[in-house]
Image (cartoon, rainbow, N blue to C red; front, side, top):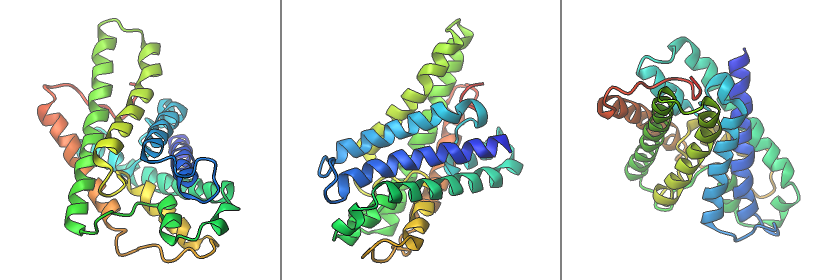
Length: 256
């Protein structure tokens, strides 16, 4: 149960800080209102880094079903633990979204735009084309999983060559955060880069059930894209790294 609790806590932190920065930028009369896409992408990158710092040594800090499934596809994470990880991630993401709602409670009434309210919780494509949106999310998630595998594998190589373990453990989460920042800046424009089924689905459910004044619908017609596309893209990214990784091992944990 310890690893599942860690995934719950890590994903909660991810959504609390990630959706939190979106709320700050989008909701009316927030001090961060209109601060823009750079702030959102940087906030999400740091949210990932802090979440990985928090639980990486316990559960490997997957905090993303696409990462969990990608590792299982390669046979380096047990399929038996996949359902538990994903359930913990979904629950953590839901609670994180509820906490964001509470943190910005007075601002929902101040915000008239229903789309902005929905955008705090989940992704919305700028141009609604399901096939293109699916491809975008799959590419971005493949880059995420490929990049995480490369970062961890390089840290292992440097460790074998004498790099102090404490240095690797201290730096890896921050570099992964910068990877997410890069993905958001480069590939996030079309869809808002969900790249994580739990990050999109659970907060979307929170949007549907929370008493948010004038919130509108939760856009369920689009909801399958940020769930299925990251799962496909994550598996592709993991397999590509194995094919192109020159024998570098991929491990299920960020720390060993």
